[in-house]
Length: 199
Image (cartoon, rainbow, N blue to C red; front, side):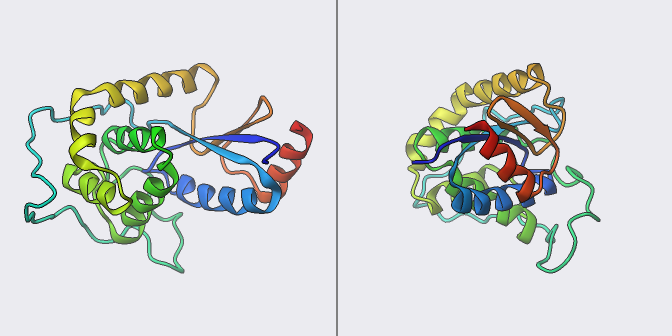
């Protein structure tokens, strides 16, 4: 069994989170630890969510116009793209991730959403996108949508964001290993050392 838990605060709009989570998972398979993904809203002042929108059932044909030009192309640097410049709020996709996490599918949902956002330019604030991503990893949208629409998962994300602020999180990704906080990107070597000393 993994000997440690590494908590990572991330935001979908942060390119360093996208890179950092990939490196973190590689380290987890090599070193042996569990990953606890936690939301952090880089644009916490933009919390809009449309309560009255009607989302078609899974069987309905829908024209999904949520894709834009890619933010990232394989082999090119992410450093040239200012974080969050293409997405006003990540609250909705973080709420969907929280729903997936309660069902043990947050890793799958995170990668499905992140790869679409950074490699295909998909707008993660679009509810048709959230539905499509949820269905693609095997979640039941007919059960998921009423839960999202109720706002309970949005409130959960906001509460977790505020908890992150209270422990001193100010940027993404940030990591907590054995009670120690590491803010910003961390190298595999630093992470390995932190995990070893936390045991």
